[in-house]
Image (cartoon, rainbow, N blue to C red):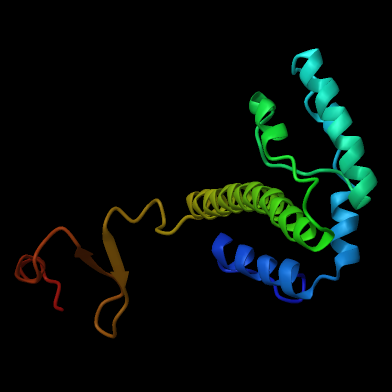
Length: 179
């Protein structure tokens, strides 16, 4: 992903990652990713005891059959629905496909969080840079403080000519200034 970055948008990042995950990653990488998730019983510890017990039994059966943890994007608050989607009857290829899709949902969520954090950091950095430019320009004296809207010029006939910027050229000519 580093070689392909920087990405222009979250959609670009997700599209690239999806292609990498589903088309370039070996199954061993999928299994490694699956193994980082907690056991189903740990993940839904707030569920009623009977449900936790059933989920632990299901998790053990699932792990014995497929050699990796059951993954689901079902919200913990709906843990009763996990047993409804119990997938122990699938063969390994079908389950790898389903689980890789569930895992990719987790990946997308993390990419979104990362993109939002990086976007916020970029905005803060831009604000800081703008603040530095404004602060710096406020420190610089662009017009001398003693100018009072006058331009001082030297010429061959006069040593100093005053020109009032608040007057039109004809008014300046009437006081002896020629433009």
